[in-house]
Amino acid sequence: MTAHALQRAPATTALPAMRLVAGKKPSVDDIYPRLFDAILEQRIAPASRFTEESLGATFGVSRSVIRRVLAKLSHQQVIILRPNQRAQVAAPDNQQTRQIMEARRMTEITMVQLACAQATPTQLRQLRELIGRERECIERDQRGPAIRLSGEFHLQLAAMAGNAPLAQFLNSLVPLTSLIIAQYEAQACTYCAWQEHVAIVDAIERRDVSSAVKLMTQHLDHLEAKLLSRDRQDCTR
Image (cartoon, rainbow, N blue to C red; front, side):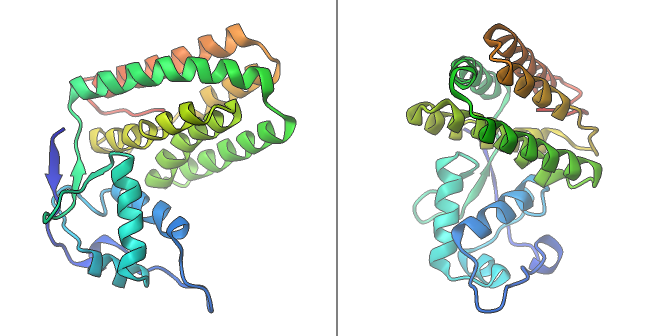
């Protein structure tokens, strides 16, 4: 996998200081989405480099917390960590993108079939709430969170499917897909995929396996076509 080396850039222009809650230190779960959003929005750009120390100072946490966040992003293939080298942001090429989408398609077809069989009303409501948050971020032009939440929709579906190995495998593909979307989209994007997410949830709620599989397949086909487009002016999920 190719990668962009991270070079040092002023923290004041790349990452805003995190507002801390009195009496509470941010955890890994607090820092992860903020750091991932910064990567997706290219506030940590391919040409930027940050050390554990500088990230820790920005977020007001110890190096050990930052190290755990970076390890999680590395496990998800979003960044590349090598011994005695600075972290790198991954940059999958078209061949790798095709392979990722092929793996996602095979996995998520099974996932949506399982979800149709066992999704609960509570889980479906949580999915719709997640789509609502995604839509709000799109309307506010919050690009990084919108891309991340769009990916979390698929991860939450995997959790609903009740198959832990399948969910773990998908967790290694979806964040990397989010990174590809962010890197390939050079301009402001008009998102429309939340409507496709709604249609998938509607089919699952009806226990309509055939429609759910068809909608998920079309959804991923649309995404792959966008990502492999040479113009790369649009993005979706």
